[in-house]
Image (cartoon, rainbow, N blue to C red):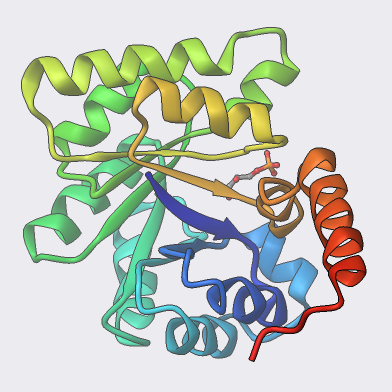
Length: 217
Ligand code: G3P
């Protein structure tokens, strides 16, 4: 399972990249606003930190304008992945860009049929939003399972990128279903490392080691 971080905070990205466990980055207009920096400049910096796919989202709603924005964004770096919304114009843009060999992440997916359309449009990634789905009383993980089944039925190469991840259980469930990628805020990724029994175990081992009076080397 690939791990992407869902942020435009370059310091957080650099910190996580140091672990060697980060495979890519996703951004969206809200995260760019939160970072408070120039969009193209921050995407360029992120692409220099992480060699994997870095999603940068178009904000136009019509196909022609989406293509114009995508043209600017894809020139920023080779690892830019153009993010488009799951609309008719978004999928037209996805089809055009993917036919030219550009990576595309189709975002704001809330149904398995939408995911089927994105795969047919040649998307590199489909981003179902599990947290926002849960928020309105639906089962976000059931959506991931349905998409996995459909993509496997037809051998679609589109990767399932579980987005709107709110807690470690989302990641656990997504991994059990066999999702290809998850993207989560830095705080949620950091939670994965922690367990109270790991901390307690380290304390116990260090206390006994100190009593042994030994050193290594
Ligand atoms: O990047 C898209 C997605 O991960 C947004 O998550 O928490 O705003 O629903 P959230």
